[in-house]
Length: 332
Ligand code: GLN
Image (cartoon, rainbow, N blue to C red; front, top):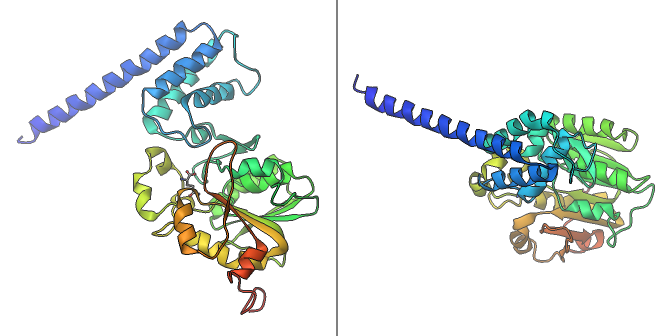
């Protein structure tokens, strides 16, 4: 009996939360019901998202884009929204998804099973990182000016996850052939779905591998968004990130492990005029300290994002980050 009081207080507290939540949800519904145009729905929803301290960074970087995405998805991407009156049959699913976005702090991409990347639609779920690498904008211009991909060129996407980088290369750079690797069989299942969705089975091949595939190919470009978050920082990421596979985020203690292993062997897989283009985000500074002899070129990104570098095969060779001189590739 001693515990009865605290338990009662806890129950009351829970009831309080539930009531506040219901009122809050009702308030969203009322505001949406009052709105006269689809655009007002977007504004109302964005405003509601803003009031709930969400983190954006999984396909959008602000509440308005997130609200617009949600509504366009429910419209099955049929029409622009603008002045049209809102489709009131969508009110229930809209409120339900918006409430889940706020309550579960789950990235919208997972709630919808969809992400947009380099202008393309991808199927996603919690087995893969939500596609978002700023490398998209480089792919859309065929990696120019570092190398203009031509038909017949081979490209390697390391740690492909949903397949987004490799598939975007195959779509935006006609005639290229892409090999994409991932260490996670779960991720590769999602990537295979996306390869099929885009009808690219003949030009995108998937390999289960820790970084490099077991092929004889030499690539014109290696692209990668490897895991690079320092282990100790994983815990401090906003709750949205906890829904993503930790394997796709967590580097080693300094965040650099996978990237350094990639750099150490990349020259052996690149053509003499090939390039490596890799995202390391906030780990850029630490990487330059870890590899002071490598002449990293940090890409200026027009659409936002940071921490994407380019290295030429020659630089990787000259800096000695290649097994070419010793027990090199295919010579074991
Ligand atoms: N913080 C990075 C992001 O959200 C982590 C991605 C990664 O480790 N590749 O994009």
